[in-house]
Image (cartoon, rainbow, N blue to C red; front, side, top):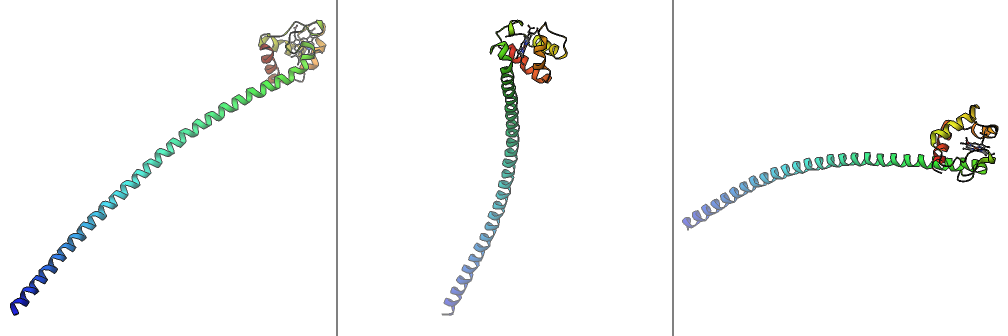
Length: 162
Ligand code: HEC
C-alpha cells in the first residue's frame, strides 16, 4: 500500500513539475511573441510614418500643380477681359471705322483693319497729344484722350487682328 502511495505521489510531483516546466516554456514563448509583436508594431508605425511623409510630399507637388493651373486660369481670364474690353471699346470706333475697321472714317481716314499694333499705338498716342493726323484729327482726340496706355495697347492689339 505504502509503495503504491509513494509511486502516485512521485508521479503527481513529476507531472506537476512537468506542467510547471511547460508553463515556464509557455511564459517564455509568450514573452517572445510579445516582443515580436512589439517589434512588429514599431515597424508598422515606422511604415505608417513613411507612408504619411510620402503622402505629404505628393500633396505638396499636387499643390504646386494646382497653383500652376490656377495661375494659367488667371492668365486666361486676363486675356478674356482684355478682349471683352477691346470689343466694348471698339463699338464706339465702329460707328465711323466700321465693325471690322474696314471703312474710311468720314471719308477721311485710311481703313485701319489689320494695322500693325505699333502703328495704331503711335497714331492713337499722336491724336492724344496732337502730333498725329490730318485735317480731321480733332474728331479723333476725344476718343483717345481719356484712354490709358493699357487701353490703347489692348485696342491696338484688337485692331491688328481685324
Ligand atoms: C466720329 C467718327 C470717329 C470715331 C468714333 C473714331 N474715329 Fe478714328 N478716325 C476718324 C477720322 C475722321 C480719322 C481721320 C482723322 C485725321 O484727319 O487724321 C480717324 C483716324 C483714326 C486712325 C488713324 C487712321 C489714319 O488714316 O491715319 C486710327 C488708328 C483711328 N482713327 C482709330 C480709332 C479708334 C481706335 C477709335 C475708337 C476708340 C476711333 N478711331 C473712333 C473718325 C472716327
